[in-house]
Length: 262
Image (tube, rainbow, N blue to C red):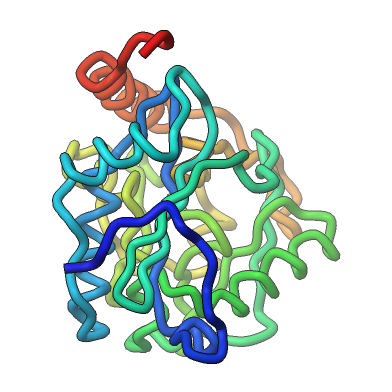
């Protein structure tokens, strides 16, 4: 099992991180509570198993450790978990630069994602491709970029899961097509608020509405897609997704919150 630690110094010459051999999770924290922590740790556990690395401690152990050593009582921000070198490093900080809501979306075709590749299925610290997508979006005047796989099917964004609303139903690219199994994506799929589908750029152009999800930002409405003339409206499917997520967040704050004086 990985050793929990708040020590984040790394002996880089001896660390597997110099080769990108590790996994990470970024967890939204509201009023001192790491939200959807169980889902984050389940995804982390799956990734560690795929990389033949030891599993993380259980959710309750990580939650108690974070409360004691990382997350200030009542604080809002982001809890970062990095698994490498036999350790699960834990620290708290401000969220990274956010995506505007509503957002402008770029469909990026500068390269293609290999749907069966290891890096598409797990949240590894080998993050260069995602950083380049963020740069491509900013250079084009967009807030986020979604990428295609080698078959021309939609995957996901640099930091987000994509949803296309069609005939009132929210559809999200399949994990089999290269989409990362996002934690909010899982929540919405299990709640019946979305389902997997094969999606192409034509589906985006013909969509009733489009939205994104991200563990830190929640649900982000897409108002405009570069290269598509019409502006996208708000939609009941987006409101329903947002309500489902907000109810889960509220439930977890109620269950795990602690007084700021603790």
